[in-house]
Image (cartoon, rainbow, N blue to C red; front, side, top):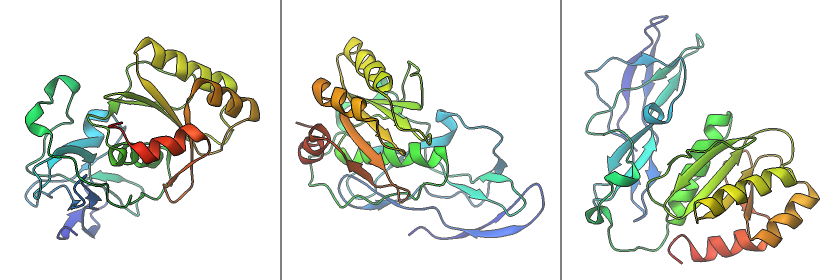
Length: 234
């Protein structure tokens, strides 16, 4: 657990005690972005990938990975972006080098993030993909009919935080996009899947997961179960 610090809201002046949440590195060590006590928090008016994620290096194994930028909700309704130190902008695929790759280590237990908003769902899926072993997670270049796309080396993932079950068209669109990029694809849905969508996913070997509100993805087909067993390195 990182040390707490006082964070004052620039809009209403209220002061909060805040500690950045820690997430598990691939080596199992909890990693939290280091907070900058000298900088002033800023109000968040909209979210972008580059501002929502920072690159932090694990103190135990030296692995550099992307973590959610610390944020705090004030009781006045303002969302505050808490400044960090010693972190950089998210890694891009062409920025990664072989020196960033530590020896493979057994996966630690996945620690979910509670889902309250669509952004929480994206954060939960990004952390889950990293737990599976995928690197350089970023926003996908191509938009899908619904939800938010994430991409990493070897996978294209779709996060659907809507209240309707994913349709056959949603699955086929994701699969077609993945085929053009010669990569695997995974779908994460909060509301589940229509029956024909599940059947089509089985035929196309698309991994399907359902997100519960604890932020823990649950496999709903054989491809998803196999992905959990093998991870990204298989």
